[in-house]
Amino acid sequence: MDINFTLISQAIAFSTFIWFTVKFVWPPLLRAIEERQKTIADGLAAGERGKHELELASQRSSEILKEAKQQASDIIHQAEKRAAEMVEEAKHTAKAEGERIITGAKAEIEHEVFSAKEMLRQHTAELAVAGASKILRKEVDAKAHAELLASIEDDLK
Image 1 (cartoon, rainbow, N blue to C red):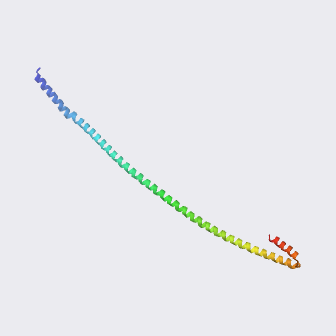
Image 2 (cartoon, helix red, strand yellow):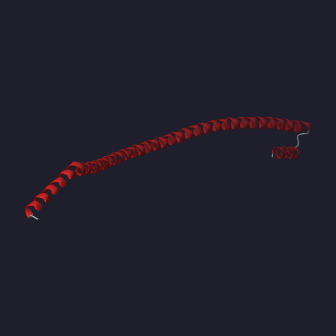
Image 3 (cartoon, rainbow, N blue to C red):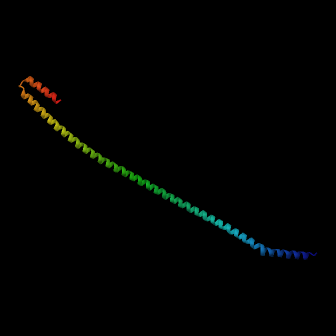
């Protein structure tokens, strides 16, 4: 056989093989490669979007946390202020109640002192009348008079 014929037949076979590969094998391979590239690109883009959304979520959560801490601080401050107001109000109420009780007690004491003085006056007057009547019934004698005064003195004790 001739080398030229073999070379030409191999060239024709190779050309046919290339044409068949380009026409029937190559397009599905390219489509698969392009689909794979698209899938990879979409996955990378989704990863980047996810990373960006994670950063945004992290920023939002830190802002929400700061707001929550601020609100908690405000609530605590208001509670402390209200507690101080309640303590002051209770002090004023207790002081007013104490003054009212003291005023009532003083009035009661004054009434009791007045009643005791009146009773003492009445008792003293009765004793004086009793002493005078005893003195008038007896004769005027120094010794008897001294004994009578001693007995009145004992009555007063």
